[in-house]
Length: 496
Ligand code: NAD
Image (cartoon, rainbow, N blue to C red; front, side):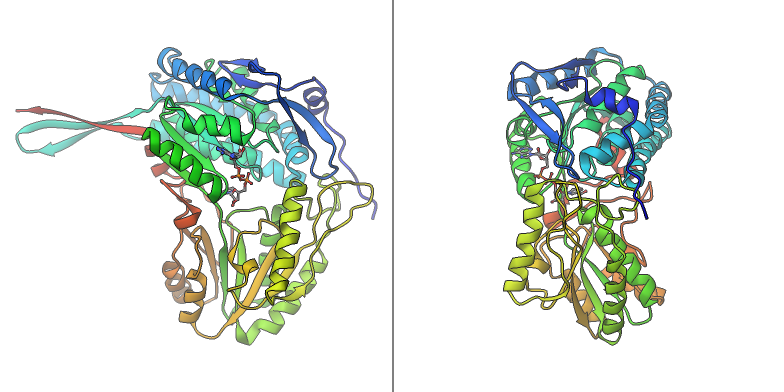
């Protein structure tokens, strides 16, 4: 079948061909004070998409000042919640109107299949609407029944909130992060990943176009070691949120600790899928192969350790092999592609090196992975891979962040729970069985932020999502608790 490659939309051509791309600060496209730039590449072709201004530490600090000024003077923080809701809905409506443009920018910049990129943009819109509506329905003053006193609590926005995001879900994660902060009346400063800054900058321009006051949504592009470090070390940031690797999360946590700034860390994972003997083997294999190949396995909450009941192991492996043969590795915009590239050469090398290290430590290769070639494309491609063996193996213990799963077998329920919990991470696991009593029991025994039943990667708005241990701390995303995180709490008391 001939593959159809989508052509760039005129708006995307205009955006990418307009010369150096700047951040958005104080409502303006601002190139910063320095002359440093960095390149954003198409992971599927290796081609440079755009040259972007790299903010210095001083530029980031100035941006934080602008965000705090907007908090105090733009009227955003003191708007009635319903008025703020109207503004946020206008912003969401505008992003929705341009969703195909934002999605194509995201697809090209992050190496995503167009349908997945579109889903991420729709998720961004949904996040803004969800928190805009929720904030209007939460009591911010609560009267307390205390003998001898009149007393109440009050929730108020903090000020400028900082966000540092990774490259795997740039626009979706930006929505998860900034939606509750903005709905609560804060202003935001966003540092996108240097591999994928383009959708965040475009959407910040849409915030301005939708009539959000200047300085409420700021995007500061730059390198992690300079712009990211400066943002997390800035004492003017009132609340910090970081999504990314545990290694950088520690650095961000240290900086915030020094400034006594509350911080939320959303970090990596090494989730387990526990598959019992009563499942539909083919359907379960299809879903788990689908999960590990979705966005080429660059998903923090993926199931990368598969614990399969001994009695169905051979059939399960056969079903997985068949599913993996259907995976078509290719350029993300080609119509026949089912799995695109990884984000850059460093990430491809990381995946390949874990395969080597895993095999060197005795892992069996069930479905061989390795580098993949795509005709006419000089991008960063790998094949999906299945390994098996002892869960002590390095490929079973450390986050690879590619389309690689590690399998092992179990006999007893208790053994499966012990194996699932034998990890430094604590993000997301799943249990697969038709016995719903057992499903609930195992799900509750898994020590992690999230347990899913007969599915993996489930994100219903309103359900909290977050990690523990090496996977994160400080509260999660997507629920009413997240909104509360973006209000500081104050008690007010008068003795009677
Ligand atoms: P990363 O930690 O290398 O980078 C994340 C961000 O931090 C980037 O914007 C980067 O520029 C910035 N950064 C780098 N050095 C910095 C420093 N010294 N100070 C401040 N900021 C700095 O992560 P990545 O490679 O972009 O993303 C992959 C990781 O993200 C994986 O571990 C994945 O599991 C995790 N992740 C977690 C979640 C979640 O919700 N828990 C979601 C997506 C990704």
